[in-house]
Image 1 (cartoon, rainbow over the protein chains, first blue to last red):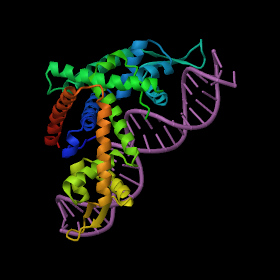
Image 2: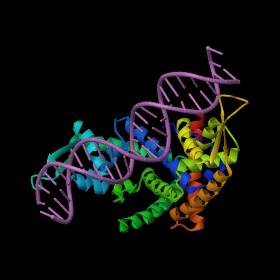
Image 3: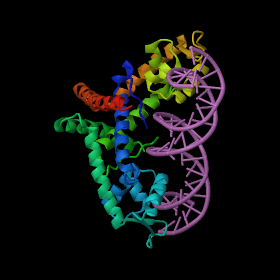
Image 4: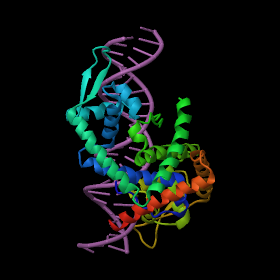
Length: 155
Length: 155
DNA sequence: CAGATTTCAGTGGAACTGACATTT
DNA sequence: CAAATGTCAGTTCCACTGAAATCT
């Protein structure tokens, strides 16, 4: 991901959708770079966070919580299970299910990733002071909320 | 693109990078949907805007201006040339080059796309009043600027 | 049987890499 | 020859579809 050096065609530069896309790309890259140092991908962090908040859970539950597609979850869990950061065990109570749980190593990994995510946020928002950072997250949160609610009812 | 219904795991919901990614995804989808009605993709709009600002230009120039990768440009121009929205002609002055130019139909197409892009922005920012919209674009612009400048020198 | 869960194979767009031929 | 240009084939990542097997 080298990302266009943004010659900023005049007509694009003012478009919120374009600004969002470009900024999100930088954000994603910063986070990815931080993760890569621990051989991790953003999906791993999202998954581990969801798992940490849920406790041992089925893949379907993790999918709903993390927003990761079920088919992608399979892959991500495979990757994490191979490194013994999570454990995948059949649920004796419901044999359709796998119960996924964090291992101690997984918990450590999550903490390391967390630190790096924070670092990436700081790099991302470097030009903004704390008040402005809150303004930005506040505005984004409201926009996002609006669309999330619309989509929930629509599905 | 159905997009996760965003169950907003607590630890993600506050992360600017996550908010940006999610919001950008909605923005991208809104723009894409608007374009799809005219059998167009976002790449087409970016390309046509660049071309309109440049006037007849080589593919390399369009790539630099639009931020679209040269190899992707080939495809996008093929698609637009097939519909006679742009014209690809060899440059007599430099036979390595193709000169790409807008046809009248391409210009009309661009105007139609422009209207739809505006509509998408409005859908995107629906929950914000005009002052807040400016705040958001202002903050995003500053963040983006910071990273663009960093990357320009670094390449 | 409907419905949920897990898995797998595959699609599509965006962005990129690498190689190549051609021309300046 | 180095550099620029255009083309093509292929890769990676995210997000998603569709289908199947298994189980409640």
